[in-house]
Image (cartoon, rainbow, N blue to C red; front, side):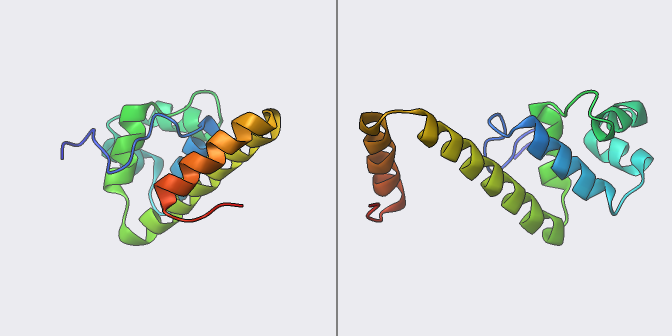
Length: 115
């Protein structure tokens, strides 16, 4: 796996989740060290922290690949929460027929019955 690849797709991770991942990683590293790990400038990291810009898919993949085991658990939780929140918003915004499509696809994917 190259530096720019990740085990799970990052393109659907929201901006807010990307910020949380950067904040998490910054809690155990300096801005300069994190910038070096991500292959960006310290100014770019500062912009992420200030919510002026968000990490690209490539930068996010590098962050995930560079994460320590204990960070990875938190990152996975951030991504799961982000995905569930997005799915919940989608589910609430569509009609019953479309909700059934979601239920059926989730049921097949997860191998469980969804009421």
